[in-house]
Image 1 (spheres, rainbow, N blue to C red):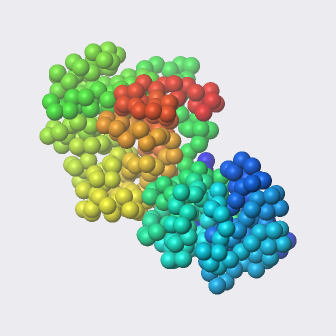
Image 2 (cartoon, rainbow, N blue to C red):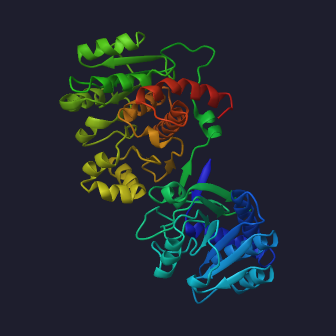
Image 3 (cartoon, rainbow, N blue to C red):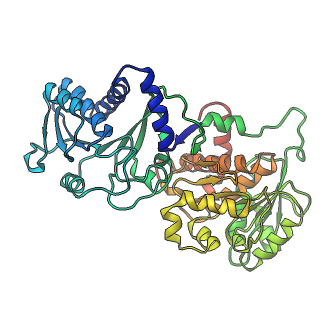
Length: 464
């Protein structure tokens, strides 16, 4: 499990580590890891030029000590000091190793191959001061390596407010931070590399992200005595005259082999289309979970009311979300930002600016699991736990992808997973299947459904 912690917890763990280590040892570990990552990105030391953007705190100290190591390996290193206060030992080490420092942007030599963002660290506030903005704008086409977090983001919430660094690579220390995983700040992180500092006493994470081993442990698998009913039966109520394809896509996700049976209930002409594509799908009957809403149109309210009468878990998606007044504790709501905004009575921009806060608010308000779709999908539980989905590709932003997702999640729910696990595992599989289906290029939602079984096979085999 990839875990991300709040700044307060990281500070406490760092203080405990520093109390048991020699003075400066923690910063030296961080600087060594940072320097190694920079060298790896550069590809070659000799002939390379690196510019350190140095702020006043330990973040700047990490950059300066790493710069000293880089200079010792033959990299031409300059440091632009962006504050009156500077980490003196780190600066002295850089100069002793052959680097140079200046406070004047115009005093810098040739354009660098790489910028190292040591402007502000995890204690910084959103936004950047004018001097930092000017330095970044002077080298707008030069890739940036961020130290710990991209400067200018809100570390504990992932919010952005004003100018900030957009990194090609972020080298973080000890543990991941919320901003690394949660949008919109995660979009500024680039590739992410963790330098282990052996921090203890971190406490409970603020957010988590499933990894292949976690998914493998959670995936339901049939026992030797399994039969179709014991494996789970999922029902799908979806589709309309206007959106018949939504039903087909939701059924495709549900019918990826994760349960023993799929039932479809909807308009007869849509049912004919579903059965033609999926002859194993049957009609009305008992289920262990319902998927309700994709393409439901004017019938979505009736679909939700009928599904809720069965007293089984329900995945509520698309058109049905507008008709959620009360939700069962075992329900999963799967809105995108616009749908969640309408449910909460706020603007879409507000949800997109602070998805973590709004997903938690919605989960608390309705007392159930909320899956907020996005670049990094969030799954929030009523008890405050949050998982972030880091699988997937931008090509997944395509019509019908959410319908497939609802079907996959519903199947996992019917197979016996708890709502929080079903939503987060389903989202992970959906993103991994999209990555496989895209293979670096475009994809359609129906292709995502086709690849779910292969992703499940590879994950169970330990190939993920």
